[in-house]
Structures are given as structure tokens and as C-alpha cells.
Length: 272
Image 1 (cartoon, helix red, strand yellow):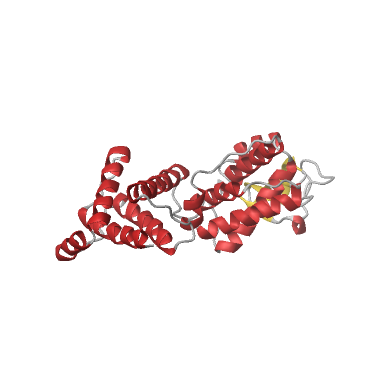
Image 2: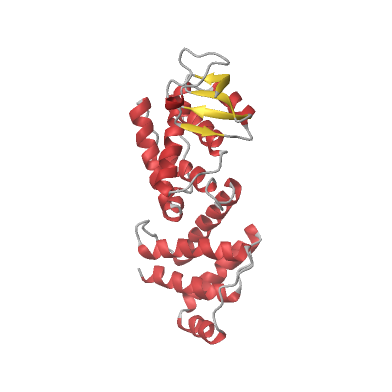
């Protein structure tokens, strides 16, 4: 396995089985030059990327330390969730983290308006994000805000198998946030992010939106729906307001039976 190009002290492009691969490891390129044989014991990661050129460009413009930290976070994430992430994570997360660290050094912090929803919807990924923030502090002496853990969580989630793309995930999470806001405004209440009814509502909304996107109906018989309308008129009226806002703002149509389930969640929240 010979070096065809040195990206930095910890990453090289090698030729292996007549295929170009990226080898990553601490000090893997130290005192090495093109055509030198790689010390296999130093290889921590070896992968083939369709985006080799993009990664090379990225490594040329960010500090080497940021790349190492990002790879350590990716390794931790893959072990934590027990699965490999899409190869694009090596570019997307590295680029994001480097920019976040530089922003923090300049005193610029970006608030994540979806923080509370991400904590609930992507709990595993958010835990990884919190670990990443602690790891960055340990390695760089930079304290990123908790908002950054949520941004990292989105990157991890969207790079999982069937995780969806970033835009879809952000749009869905935004719809959920706006829906909760519609409910709390209608009922004139405040909810605690630790409230189990709040967690249940957000989780239900996530799966409801997924079902609608995939044309899968969550059916409820007409008799049960009629009873819910009669027994919980305020919560059902609130659910109808939710449906109206979703239709107008996002073009999302909630079936009547889905409104029944949402009514039950709203009623639980209202009784809190």
C-alpha cells in the first residue's frame, strides 16, 4: 500500500488493490513522501470516497486538528449507534465543526431554534452531540454552546441509513416546532420540555408526518373519532386549528382520523 498523495500529517491517499483510498491515522504521513509505503499499524480508518477531491479541498483550508477531532467524533458516533454512517459525514461534519469552532473563537454563536425538538426526536444523536461538545472542549479548549450539540445531532441523524437528508429533517422538525407553538398559543399554556405529554406529542407528530409522506394511514374507526370530538371539544378544535395551519403554511393535509389521535395528545397536554 503506497502513498499517492499526502493530505496532511494524519491523512493520505493510498493505492490499494488498484483502488484509490483514504487512510487516516495519527501521524500516518510523518516523515513520509509520495510513493512511500504506509505503516499499516498506523491506519485507524481506511475508506473509499466518491468525494475525494472535495475532501482534499476541505483539508487544504481547515486546521489539521479539526479534521482529527471530527474523525474521533465520527468513530464515537458509529460505535454508539452501532452502524456505519454515510461516507459524506467525513466532509459535512468536518466542515461544520471547523466553522463552528472558528465562529466560537470570534464570539459568534448561532442559536438553534429546533433545540428542544431535536433533544426529544433524536435522543441518541443528541447524546453524541453533547459528547462531541465535551470532546471539542477537551481538545481545543473551546466551549461550544448546547445549540451546537443539536446541530451535530442533525448531521449524525441524516447520515444514518434511511436517516433522510438534512433539508427534509430540518423541515419536518420545523413543522413540529410550529405545530407545538400553534397548540400552546391556542390553549394559552406553557409546556415544560421535561413533560412526558410534550414528549409523546412531539414523537407522535414526527411519525404522523412520516406516515403522511409515505401515504400510510393511521386509521381510527368513525365511532371512536365521533366520541373524541364530543368528549374533548376544546382539544379537537385545537387539532383543527393545527390542521388548518399545516395546510396553509406547509401544504400538509392531516386526515380526519389523524386529527383524532392528535386531539388525544392535546388533551393530555391540556390536563397537565
